[in-house]
Amino acid sequence: MEHAYEILAKRGFIEQVTDEASLRDRLGSPMTCYAGFDPTADSLHVGHLLPVMALAHMQRCGHRPIVLVGGGTALIGDPSGKNEMRQILSREEVQKNAAGIKDQLSRYISFDSFESAVCLNNADWLTSLNYIDFLRDIGRHFSVNRMLAAESYRARLETGLNFIEFNYMLLQSYDFLYLYRNHDCMLQIGGNDQWGNIVAGIDLIRRVAGGESFGLTFPLITTATGSKMGKTETGAVWLDPDRTSPYNYYQFWINTDDRDVERFLKYFTLLPLEDIRVEVDRGIRKAKELLAFEATRLSHGESAAQLARQAARSAFYGEGDNLDSLPSTTIKKSVFQTGMPAFILFAQVGLCASRAAARRLIGDGGAYVNGHRLDSFEDSITLDHCRDGVIVLRAGKKRFHKVVVD
Image (cartoon, rainbow, N blue to C red; front, top):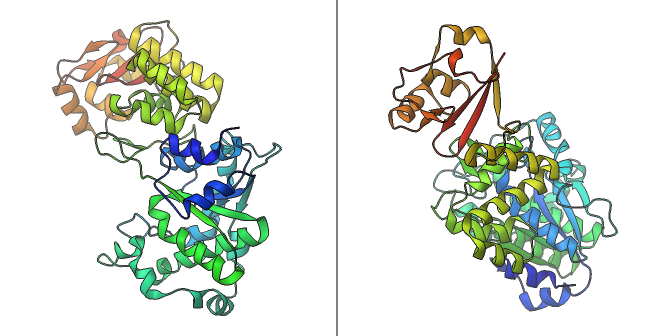
């Protein structure tokens, strides 16, 4: 079986690591590692996938992953990578958001295999802490000067860092200590913005338990255009199919910039590196379709990925007639009897953020109805556009929406 560290290194996951030689050696035998996910929304999104994929690789190499849901730390909010304080959520909101994370991650990580992953919630130990005892036993090991030098805090000093957020490093460090003591966890992984918190946890384990532990961080992914990974003009790309449909999820991946395709195949699929190289050499269009299919299959299953691929082929390439997976909106037949202005319809179904944006899209020649470009935003959509109860809208080259006329 291939060495986990070598797999992560070859696929581009590793940005920083503590004591690389010792960690390589330690990963030669089964080891427990963890990554944390704060449930600040009721779904994870594509921006969370790098640590998820890393845990999947670790498990496939015989190591035991811990998925730590930050039910306790989410009550405070992580200042890392943020210009302002996160919205503070209620306990009820955090519990609701945390409930679906394990189900989403079970597509990537097995919770019932021999090397079973474990899903824990740090609310189970953080919310019952005695504040005075915590300050005395844990807080005394932290230097304020060193904390302020950490990038996650230093970047916030100009805009303001409140005392609640200042405690986040202590709590994340305590999580690592707790997992080290109770679950024999010796490795924490996360995005590079977590480096300071991870190193602080390693130091706490050394001071309090006299133990050895490790940290590994991943690069913060941006696209070839410089934009943040997982963000689109309509917002985040969610793993929850109710928030981002499998078709739209597929479209996000197939719209990947040509320059990012090989890199994203290494990050966001489990395909062997030699197969990735072969597919990229065959042509970028095929490689993009493979990326979209594999990423959608991992998140939503084989059937949903096949439906999304067929719908995309129908829309883009004229292959087949299955448009079932296109995102859709049902509108009453009576609305189209007198005609609906095209710019209103494009905004209403969410292809444009506003009516003004829809007017601009149409004016620029980027709006289509049933494959025909609209000439003016004053054009009306009527029942004459309805084919078998459906009107297909397109914004630009790749964003489709199906209007079901009821």
